[in-house]
Image 1 (tube, each protein chain N blue to C red):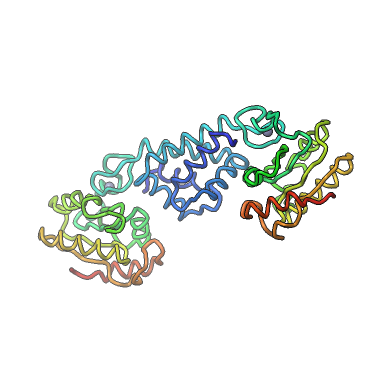
Image 2 (image 1 turned 180 degrees about the vertical axis):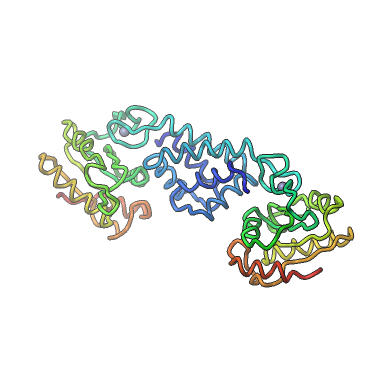
Length: 197
Length: 197
Ligand SMILES: [Zn+2]
Ligand SMILES: [Zn+2]
């Protein structure tokens, strides 16, 4: 007997990661009862993001332009390419202020259990980028989790086969830890102490 | 350096209850990267819900009509009015199949710490409904939390002053418990054993 537009909203909220039926219901009531302005703003932001965001042709991160501002910044060292899993990891490295090269954002990691292999990660795009003639070293900055390490290992093999110098963040990052939850000083240290592979 | 439409989506997601900056970021990445269809559907559902949902003039629950289908159902006993905090509580009582009266949904509870008093809860609307001549008994089915009990006490006082018979669900519901998380049998028992106030 509950209105279909309410049911549909509750059901649609479940596309959010970690949101089950009870919390979707709670969210819907909250939005309708206490924050209609927030809900309207969220609907607009979602539509706009879907419309304007794409992946930068060079670094693969979310961008409103074909090539993002960072990739065309002439003050960046184009010889260094730092590979991270997600944009949040990139943001952490930027915060260290100890890296002035460019990035490649995988938007994921090799994860056999989730059916994500080299093909799903579109590693071809990274390999093309790394061999475009401008890159002298690729720094692997995937997480030090099992999946991040497997991703780094896969990439190291593929890049070495193409004659590209590859390095990995030093293990200043705690084993099993994720960049997003690591303090900036540790990440800065790991950048300085990166080891050749 | 991250695109403004992405920042705006992350910021807008924080209107959801229990969603902080990190989980808003995770949600935005997930929607853009893995579930654009779900995000589009959510944006549409949110706009539609905001457009078409209002509060039933009689029972105050979310409704697409001025008066909801339940309130105009002639097979319901119009002499009984059960007062609950939220639509989820109404749904739980319906599931017991042991109540055939009508409802009034407060859409909240008296909560001095959150600045919600009788005025914010618009108890006038309930009092008008309870004294419209059709109601012979009001059953208070607010939660058995401190706030729910305070709400029931406030309502009992206001309704008794107007000569209306008032009852409360029996304490079959565990003290401190919430209807939404109570098993249906216990709720059915509490309905049967409701005590006059
Ligand atoms: Zn870029
Ligand atoms: Zn109604």
